[in-house]
Image (cartoon, rainbow, N blue to C red; front, top):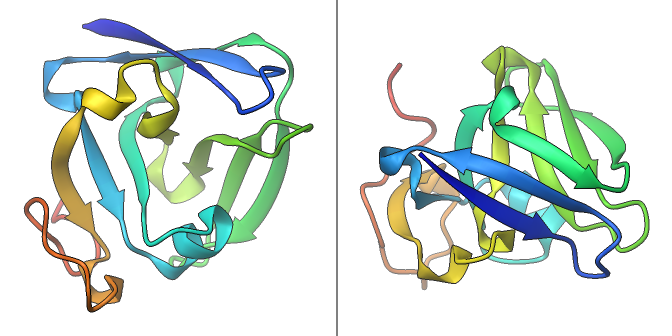
Length: 137
């Protein structure tokens, strides 16, 4: 288990995320919501238990939308620069989706899997095992 520090763009919000060895890689999400919220072709994430994420500075704001499941997705972000720290898809119980590229050392993590591959942009190459939507439970 390793603890990674994260910070938003402006430095107002900081946090830590604990990742065990098999979690030390990015899950690339190609869903249209991640593209719209992040302004990029995909987001870089890892699924962790909510207790693995600790806010150490600041208080994130929350934005809620409803995912494909029809259940709420709560996005926690810096109230100043709007960097997204993590999302909690209520359908996932106690697990949250932490943004791994924002962690110190995040640039060194390798792709571990890709989700919502059906929405990958046609010019993107596959970087890891890809699932059309989510992996089987």
